[in-house]
Length: 55
Image (cartoon, rainbow, N blue to C red; front, side, top):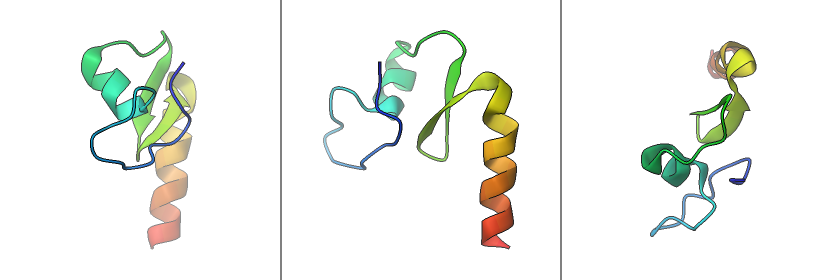
């Protein structure tokens, strides 16, 4: 299972969600939004929350 948030290290660590997304090894039902691991059904809420903070 990947970590919940990307630590932005270079090179990417073994459990990085961005690396898992690129390799295609994310668990089913998960995606990465704003460097965070989120469930597909909650992805829109995460994006709405992050854009609200920026405004």
